[in-house]
Picture 1: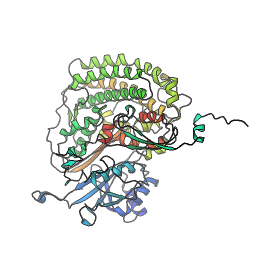
Picture 2: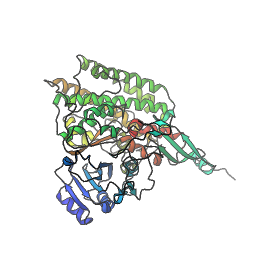
Picture 3: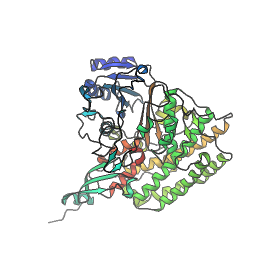
Picture 4: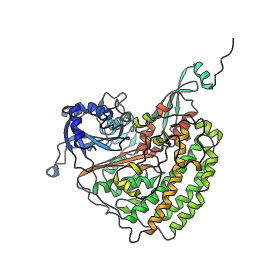
Length: 176
Length: 402
């Protein structure tokens, strides 16, 4: 993570992109809006100040509707969080980007939330976004070939969502 | 009229166009390192497109991790890269320790270096032997496995298992070394050191091997970074990056005071290249030969590190320290850590919610990213070169599919 001047330059280059940040966390992170994600990524990769030329990992975290019994203890609103871990091979620093999405698009269950694809910025994103789509059910708009990668093509549901239920039967194979 | 003469036989192949054919390779093909299915689009002998199909070993390890405590998940990391399970254990243990802000004793730190560098040697030995098999030579495999067997005996003595160790665990290691182990380890190193030259004469300088690997599957530096390649694949393309030196402080602190040089070609030279065979004239930086050679150099480098770790470990007095409790609570927050595993940079990410069971567990697999570049490397190569290129990436399907 770079110093404070770095964030101001990012804010200047892509106005209104940063919607939150935590620089005291173990891995300091900045939260960006989904609409400006690609612009931010492009700047981070190309600008002489940052040069984050490598995307290491994309993770989706499902902050689901909490159990009514535990609801009082829980501090979050239901949402899905995308976490991007970036790395600069030149200056050997890392950066964490977070993007918040609804669990379902327009809160209609079954409608996948949408995030812009960053395949145009880093080629790593191709397979990683396919994996996130496959397991966590997030639609990456602009991805050239968005289909399941680890599960079979006709698999139903998104296993890494917290409310996922294992199917009872898959082509005659007992699931549970 | 004179017949055109081509230096490269493939030029003639390019002129003769035949029907396009889809060839299915795997998932049970012996040279696909497990269960990888490749669909090749070919024109005669020339491959125009490769599409990998993965997921045959998918066990949803991440979902399992969200239902177990951090220490209980250690055995599942064994089963990711089952050829370097020690390094996988270490990656996860360090990621959890990073979130918990836990520090292990100095003795445990040196023992971790010792054991994970031995794991690296074992993994590279399989990589080397299996690569020989891919290219149609059987003997290097037997030579490599003969030495690996001795390493597995050492591991078995230390922790009781030969493949899935669960030895390095969150907060330390499950047990200290048995008496006499260090002497046996040193005896192994003394006996193994001269054998490296044997391997070089079997493969590295073997004329057929060089013909099969030099100049094949050239991965440029930019493409390697763009696709997130790491480990020997990245260094084979001339990128000077090794997380043991460049990584996060919790990981590099393990190697504080250790002397080693990153195995990468700089200004046309590999470190200590006078002791090893010269780079063949046909080899291009980033080709299969260079990826293979980086692994061979890392075997020697790891042996050096093991010797240093033995000295430091035996100089440490006092107890090794107990690992954390099985159901130790994980604080609220998240942490991501990448470590330099034999196959590349393995990343673990966990999100804690205050309970002993992490809310989210993520494993960023190095082989996954390394494999994703395959279609670029195979574009325009011969069908017979596909196993050579896949083998040079040294992938493990257990880690890709998780």
